[in-house]
Image (cartoon, rainbow, N blue to C red; front, side, top):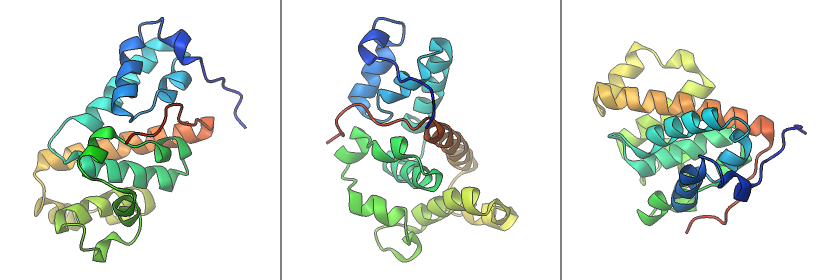
Length: 181
């Protein structure tokens, strides 16, 4: 068990992290536990949150697909924190647990996913499970569905989120807010 204390959110709301904590409460991904852990170093917490939120909440890739990939990666990482939070935006767009489970499982033959979504899900799982398969041929397949800007967005998203999930797993962080929805 880690010996890193989760800070009190009400105390953190008295710091410069308040607007970011409020964003967490509004969007529900990440949950305020992100700041309860990272808030030991407020400047670092700020920078990491801005990077996390930018990767997740902006860009040209559909947010719901990013949500499924984020949860897929959390499950690979064994991270119950990021695996347990759900984005209000993705839920409002109709994402449900059955589609999340499908995206984290045998998505290749699942009719709920387009060919483009399947290749993006494969990109995430291969980056984690077998990065040697993410070769020139794989990128050629990606280019049939995504622009190079979108491929960079997906690659950066996958790398950043998976790294944060491995880190949060080592801290044994747990969501603080009620689930979105």
